[in-house]
Structure formats: structure tokens, C-alpha cells
Length: 249
Image (cartoon, rainbow, N blue to C red):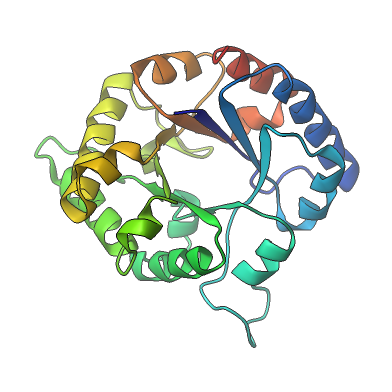
């Protein structure tokens, strides 16, 4: 299974010129890695710039999508629109979106819509706190089950899972997960999917780690068994992003 590296630029950079520089640096680095799929998720405004920087190792992703297909929904971007821009992957369920009020039900609707247009959803799940009693496990289990409602066995093969504990993302992150914590959750997520769709399907679904991923800890998560990484801040720094990609050589 090829490793998957997702660069989530969030609300960065602040101009098309800066976005083009970032795209250019990613393309340069993509030439040096093998057996790795790089998915770049810029803000909607910069999706069209990607055409200049296409490469066989790079795919275009989006950071969000509407749950509706079309209609009077001011400010929303549909799956069909993203498909027309050659977007192949979309992040759904990110903790920062959940903190804005997105529910499992909304995320589920987005996933079903994306699958209709043959776009790969990157489903983020993760707990808000890691309690000693283990209730965080049932919390993540509910996220996975609720978000995959109505997804068929043939469709679920097109979903990428990303474990992103809320306490490890964004500027207020308290810490990153340990590689042991990630492996526990990778096995647990696969167990839930196995219960829903069977062990063969579960085994083939990529499970990524995201949450304060940086050039210093990336290698340890890959060596522990992460099928890839969802990277925020360090994907905006060409030198640090290059260092992360170098751990996959």
C-alpha cells in the first residue's frame, strides 16, 4: 500500500502568488519520492492554480464540501463543482469543522454526496479528551459508525480514515499523540470497520495520523504503521515538508 501524505493548508497562504510558490515546491519534492501519494488541499480560492503544477504523484484535494448537491446555499461549494475542478479527495469531519458545529449527521451527508461524484472522502475522527475509563473509544466508535451510515461495502473502499485527536490539532494543541496511542486507535478503527464491512475491507482501508505532525515526529508514526499523515502547519513550510517526505524514501 502506497503511503498517503495530505497537506492541509487551512486558511493559508494569503495570495495566489504565495500559493503558486507552495504548489511549485510540492511538485519539486514529489519528483523525489516513490510509492507515495501526495494530496494537496489548498483553500477553494486556489484550486484552479493546481493545473500548472500537475505531477503523477500529486492529487488535488479540498478542505470541505457542502452536504447539499446544489441550490440556494450561499457560500457553499458542492461535490459537483469540486469534481469539475478535478478535485479527487476532500477532507470531511476535521476537528476544526466539528468545533464550528458540524455533526456526524452532516458529515455523513457530505460523504454520501462525495461518493456519488467519485471523490474520495478523507474522514477525520478523534476524541476531545483521553479519559482513563476508556470512554473515548466509544466516542470514536460512534463517529465512525454515524459518519458511514448508508455507505455500501463497495463504496467504503474509497474512504481514507484519519485519526486526529482534538487535543493534538491547531494552535491550542496540548501535545501530539504518541505512536503507541496512534497504533491503538488504528487497530480500533479497523475493528469497527471490520464489524461493519468485514475484515478484508477493513484491512485495505488506509488509516492516517494527523495532529501536530511535524518533521521531527513524522518518521516515528510511519515506522509504527501509519498508512500516511495529515499535515497542517509543516505543509506550509517547504523545508519542513521536504523533510517529512524524505522520511518516506
